[in-house]
Length: 304
Image 1 (tube, one colour):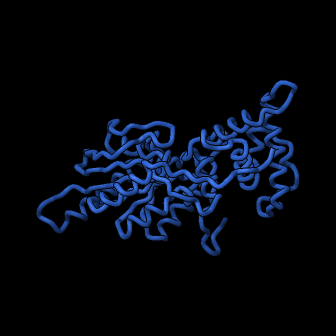
Image 2 (cartoon, helix red, strand yellow):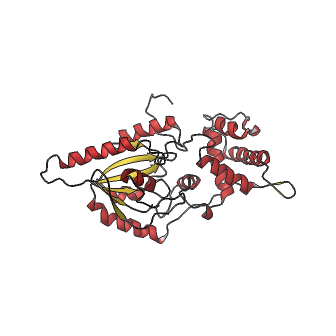
Image 3 (cartoon, helix red, strand yellow):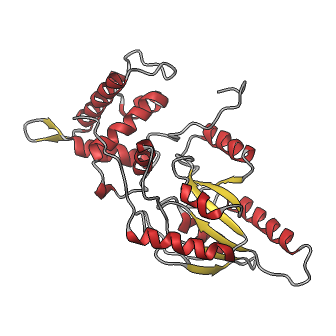
């Protein structure tokens, strides 16, 4: 088994149409809500949104914050705030964080109408890459199931305006990826977190990439979940091993998971595909633990 993930490009025709639709409708809204995955706050930010949003006021919602590292959550919030964006943590499935976000939106509506006699609703657009939880957030804001949701990328189709109880109006859009990932690592992180359909991926290679992240940054969680003997190999997260060694450790870790879970093929051959699916499922459900695959920018002199 080798570490072999080719450059990931996924740009179906409907995503090109979505970009065109977003560009034409952005002038109709007052504020853009950009939903990102708190486990990959940078990789799940679409640079296309930066291009079409321009100077439009924006708030950033770090969804799935219940699945991500709580310490990194705080550091990412601070990093976005330093860059001039309002940012909020959210668990759209449970609703945690929704009240804080709603309060900020109501304040924005009040500011919009503070100097006008005719009161107009704040018009919002929700945008983000597939499977970051946009529809679940919309359901929370609207207060009823007005947006179709699901656990597969690309469930939402077309556009729809939705009315909020506060009187604000919200425009939903399908998830949009970008034509090419200049950094292959971005595509890998999106695929690990489920923003790209598993059916289009080579899952064994993807699971190896996940294991390399976990061995480097969360070896204790990995060992606690699977009791992987090969992790006791002198690895220190601050002293990265050479690439071949990291890959070798990840391969041994994969084999250890397969053996301990009984994922075997006839002839006692290791079923790497089944082990890979199990590892990815455990990561996505936080069964391994709360994990963030990207470290927030550190302030000079700040504690790690």
